[in-house]
Length: 261
Image 1: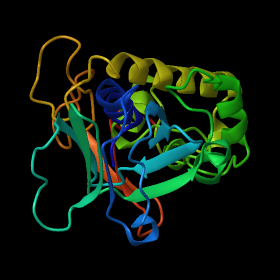
Image 2: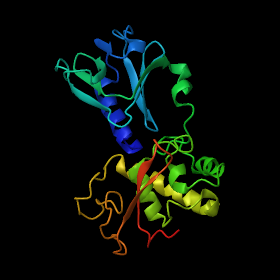
Image 3: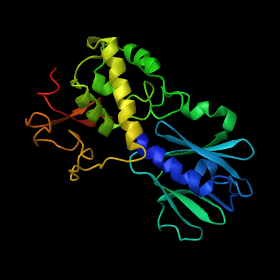
């Protein structure tokens, strides 16, 4: 599933292509909204909210999309043919550009003043203008017996972080993903979520590689994707495991030497 910084960059591309332009094509390819038609309405803006994308159009409507595991938005000059098959879920286009939503996990059309229906459950947005570290800590402490590794991926606790930045944040904080939230001092929890915010804020404009093949200073991930390879800090092998109840378990990478339990 894409991280919040990748969603941020996707929303930016959509803004550049659609904002302030009138839609000449509106093609919803999901049963619930198959008859919806936004042609003739101008796109006002597109904003990310955690891992969700909100495209607001004239007339008080918002197109809500979520990439899930395999989804993406492709922006190209208007008129380009769409991929064959049933992978396209939504096309929004103007006279210059078209945006095709490929394999989108969610497609909704909601009143703009009721966006809370689709994003109201989310915790503080790590990349949002209203990011609130203290509120994120309060949310974490509501379940002190939970592992910090699981809690960080709960989007109702704080929104936007995924498996990459969970691993990198916990490594940077020298915290084992298996520590319970309640065993971590509140001050350390605030430092932890602040670090997550800083890492993702830096990455949103200059993304780190998803793979670890780029060894330029400042461009390599420390533990994510490095199972059984030497830790960049101590040289001991990086571990890999799974966290979370099935079928929602996710990969976790950590260094047992640098992140003791």
